[in-house]
Image (cartoon, rainbow, N blue to C red; front, side, top):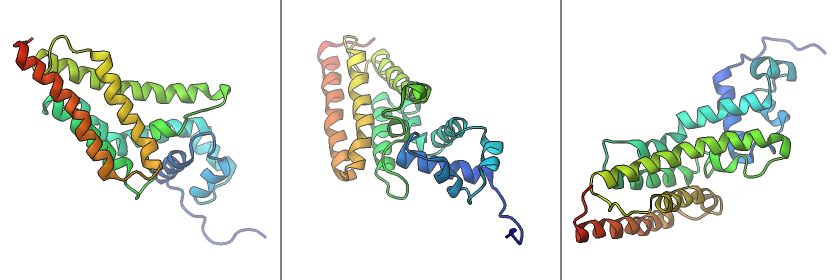
Length: 210
């Protein structure tokens, strides 16, 4: 029987948001074309491909949508209006709040949507790895700024400190999915920042201002 009435209007922006939430919740490979089409008002496969060309192309748009919205919590890491320590700490705390907020999927899309993937989808993993590397770069710049202004000693092991903060940041995803409350993660961030305080104290002891 032919359909009657006016077809439901297709809103492309809303469709990308719906896809983002599915990829965030289930991951790229586990999210089916049928799920994506259903989230967009049961559009046909032909309409889907006309709008997005491919699942991979849609995923790339969904990643951009995530970065420009929920992923903005990472912008603290490169906010030069903050002291380096405040930039790192606020970046971690804001990310923890976002990742444990149950109004959307828990964790971070950049971490969870392609933890593992088939060999033919390696480019999806690489896409996300490059985005995570940008944030590590901001953390590195932040630490270098702290050394330059004397907040941290010149002897600071930069790769170690970046790895410490970024490993914690990425680990929030699994903690959030396991139901660890924000209060516990926030308390852990306080302890983590004591590493910065200990390094900063060495600067004062040695009179290093570089």
